[in-house]
Image: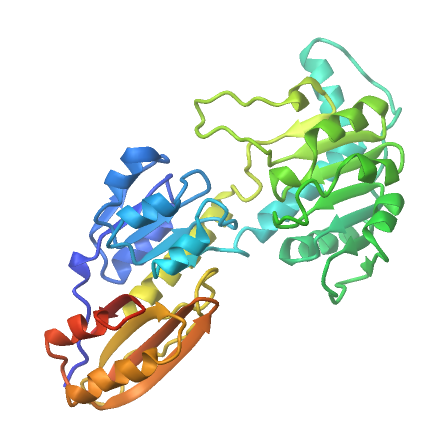
Length: 413
């Protein structure tokens, strides 16, 4: 007997913000053809209307999925963030609605690291300032404040996947690498852990930030931290806009404490390419400003599209939530068990005592034999996946949904 399969034609997938075409390829290859592709971000009622009947939604960094949007998208099963960050989604609201959120935390690592290293070289040589002058007809042919990166010290704040790869690339150019992280990390290459953030700031010729935005990292680099730096330090922020206090950075540029900076992220960013970018940093020739494109290479976008689309497919096909950022993580095997016809059910519920017992009682009352059961919890939410042999009665779903504390129930097969 063959294993039952999903009716994938009924599953609607909406991809916004021009997600790379490789995502569409992944979905179609796996049998999902009910796709809506939108090349821009949406907000307000336009967003609600576009995803009102969607089962899966893919976004990048501009579309905001807040609690109100999640509440009105009653069929929403999961959200895919085709980027690293997930700040654009209300993760708690999604979790409590039974909606796992997936992202691609590592697929653009190389692209970001390459951009940062290129910016270190350009800023050490004073290229941005000389380039801006040349565009105005000025000819600044001088070696003043122009340095090789060889032998200089790069301080990396946040020694994760991007920070470690950046360190390896920088060592290839002959740089010394220091790093600071809130967790103990094994150094790669010849990198050394700094005793403290302040000691890293004091010893580094160039500083690059690679931390998430948390209450602890907001304005992590402020007036006090700039005062700890060497004169003529280079600062690069490719993490989150609010990690650097822009007013304090402007003061450090004016005083010469910071010789040059490169920023790819900002506290407030335009919502579309047609909006004007507003920032006091626009006045400085020695500041490289890029429009949040650290991971915007064709290679990175293709990798991100494949990774996130594959996670959404896996969740839809078999219930796996591995690497979900807001949800209990369950890694599920494919639904094959010799020649026995199996069915799979997902039950998302509030993490309170007795739910699993009530689920099993419902199955027992239907005469259903459980073949396998997988349960994980996270904070306020529990997630159980059950394989069973007998075909479920139509009334089973309603019985399961009637269990107090149930958030969402779905029979996959």
